[in-house]
Image (cartoon, rainbow, N blue to C red; front, side, top):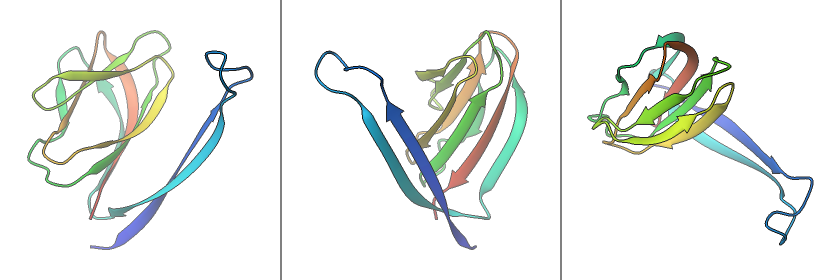
Length: 122
């Protein structure tokens, strides 16, 4: 096992005040480590049934990148239970971490393609 680093950059910026209080102009760079023997990435077709991408038995944090390649429909994100907790709208991408022993399942309301990468913490 070799530990590598992954730099995640997030930029949040508005052109006007948010709720009339302040302008938002924030760039954050976070570096995380991952086990390079536990990385997977692919472009896959989702269906209307949940598919497990991270098992609930995984006892380490997993960093996730997902891009919805569809221009009309959304992706549903759920725990392994499955309990839905998020959506990726058409054309959007997300980077987030999945807590240990929670798991992650994905599906969509119609068949569509996504690209993803999973990076497991050492």
